[in-house]
Length: 143
Image (cartoon, rainbow, N blue to C red; front, side, top):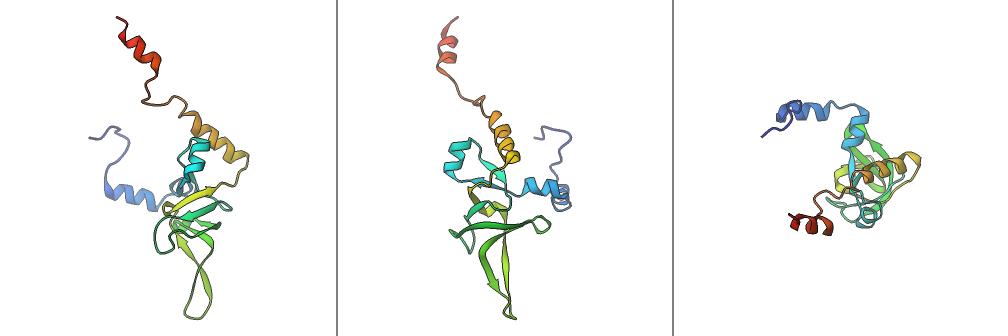
């Protein structure tokens, strides 16, 4: 059941919106999960990926390989990582594009904007959705 009348559930419209998205929207679409340590420290599950983040590849042919992000290629929805290259037929080496969803961020490149984004995302989690405290349980018994 559709909850919002402004959001389409049509595959055709969703694909069009995805592939014709502008650069800033693609930045958000190209998010990667944080490692378990970073999730625990920042209380945030994922972040948009950026240059100079350190990542580990979680899926595909290059699984378990680690490296630093050298380019985020928004036009092609891929990320280039240092030392992840392949040889072309003429002998030149080119970086292999890895989808952002196949990566896990192990070290964030921090700056004031990134820190503010982490704070903003964490602030929404302070309410502890769905958690029932001891006070709520004791107060529910009072009639």
